[in-house]
Structures are given as structure tokens and as C-alpha cells.
Length: 439
Image (cartoon, rainbow, N blue to C red; front, side, top):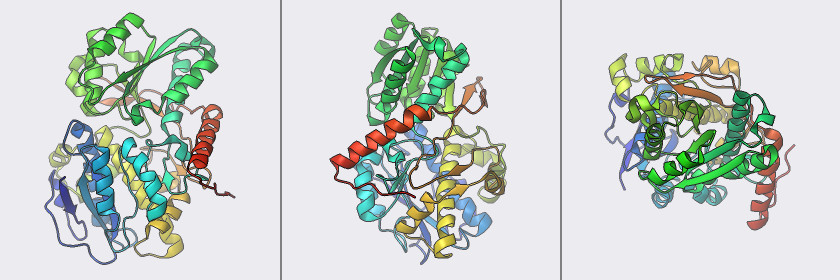
């Protein structure tokens, strides 16, 4: 396992390089963020921009703002290769680092998240699995230490069906329609299936589930099935190399790309560029804007890369997954800022950060202050709702860039939330957890 220490206090512009040399021990009182990354292996094309986005946002907060209310950020990367076993090892290595221990963990893997959930309450380190992981964790009464805002796999799947209904002229048009879900054959890939199945019963469409084995380079048989099935729409829950292979295969059978929609982990630059012209028209869900025209990116170029736009671009600034990591890092930083409002301007413990996450209220005005106006949406978390059930938006690839092509699409909360509560109650019963009472 490769372990890289990246200490940001007092470093100006060090992250202009794709790799940063190890630095001295953590300064006393720094706010420590552990980073589970995968810069190597078959998922590296997805993992690298994510790691760079986190790194650059933490650096921005230090260089531009002097830290979080004066508390400098430190972090340490641990290479997981998107492997659950390595991810758990990284968690154990990093959980006690820093002056107050780990602030929170962003596993960036549903498999790793599943393994860390029972550890979080024992170690008192919160997990922020933003838009992934165990969907039932949206019920904060059962999952006190786990957060998955701004929305979940189940909510996303329901919003996809809502989008299809909008495109086809109403929910009544779904009856008899054929929809296929091409998904990674893992806990992550299967997460959307219960919602898609429940909505198939509700609206009468014919659902076909097609699993793709890790790492996803062999999909000929899957797309031969799709060519025979001739589905009206294809939804994809893929990751890494699987996505680019699927898009190439879809193009090879002349599937209508306007009707091929990936989830938010299946819509990055690395997914579409290898397919060339064949990827034109492909769509994916997202919950933030694409590109580097937002104020936060201008600040990153200035304060992290010293104004060097070419170096920033080489480090993925503005790419979809880089942007997602920036949003994710912002949530963590603002949770600490929220906690400081109650506990004082000092490094927060994991327990205090958990309180900050549960009381997080990022308004549109706050987004403007952060240089993210229009980049993503306001979020307000509560004890009972660790997801917030936020909407999604659809982006489309035109061969050169991603563009937003829909309004914000509501999730079908009337279907999803009862499923969440049932799943959470079952988990509580199986694990002998007494749910909290939320006011």
C-alpha cells in the first residue's frame, strides 16, 4: 500500500504538481482530514481527479482563508486501489491521526463504506458518503454517524424515472416501456435496483437488470443482449473503465445516445473522451455544474496554482469528478465551521464534526460567499434526514464538453423515503440498534 502524507499548513501553491512530497509531522491543533484515494489500478481515471479535487480545496482554504476560522487543514492520502480490504486498512491507519483524530471519512467506495459503518459509532468518527454507500443511512435515527446528502442512489434512480417520464410525455407513457439497468456487479452497482424494481411495479415498465463484472472491460455479451432487447432507455451505474467500455459498446450497436443515461458516477470526462464521436449525446445525472468557469475555480487557479491555468488543467480542474470532490470537500469544511459555531474556533473532534454535519445548513447566500453560486444547491441536514432528498440535473456530452440540458428533476420521495425507513428499521433490528428520537 502506498501511503503519502500531504501537510498543507503554510504551503503555498505546492499542489501545482500531481504528486506532493511528504512533509513534516502535523502541527498541533490542525484539523485533520484523512483521504482514501485510488490513484492506481483500473479505477485510477476516476480516482485521480477526485483526489486532486479534495487536495486543491483544502489547499484553497488554507492559502486563501488561513484555514477554517484560523485552524489550518492537514490531510494524509492512503492508496486503496478501490479495494475494500485496503480501504479498511487505510481507515485503521488514519483514524487517530491529527491533534484531535480524524475529522470524518469520505470512503469514495460503497464497498468500503459498508465496512466502515459499524466502526464509525465505536470510534466516534463520522462518515460522509456523499451520494453513495448504504442508502438506508439516510435515516439518521438509526445511522447516527453516517451521512449521504445531498441525495442517494435510490433517490437518483427515482429522479431518472421522473426524467424519462418527462421526456416521454408523462408517467402513464411508461407502461409497457423497456428500460435496462447496466450496473457494476457490486454493492454499489446493485444499490439502484430496489428502487427501479419498485417503480417498475408502480408504473408498469419492463425492467431488465444487466450486471457487469469487475473491472468492466468485457461487455460484448451485455450489449448483444441490449441489441436483442431493444430497450427504450438504458440507465447505467458504472465506475472507472467500465463506463468508457459501455459507451463504446453502445455506439457500436448504434444505440440512441440521447436515451442512454449514466448515474453521477458514470458521467465524467474520462468516461466519454475515449469513445470519441461515439459518445456524443450521452447523458448522465449530476448535482453540480460542469466546467471551470465558477468563482471557486478562479480562486483555486489563483491561490493554489499561482495563476497557472495550464497547470490547473493538467490537475483536472473543472472536470466532473474534480468538481464533485470540491463540493464534497466544501461540505466537510462547512460542517467543521458549523461545529465551531457551537464548540469554539479550534480543531474539532469527530464527535463535534458529527454534530456539525447533522446541523449543516448551507444556504444560497453561503454558496455565493464560497464562490459556488449556481454551482450546486443549498443543503439543510437534520437528525431524521441525513440525505435531504435533493434533486438531480442531467448533463450531456457534445464531443468537447458537458452541458446542463434539464431543469432540476425532483426525486420521488413518496416512494423512496418509506423504502429508506423500512431498510433502516430492518438494519436496526438485525444489529440490535435502538433508533434515536429526533425532535
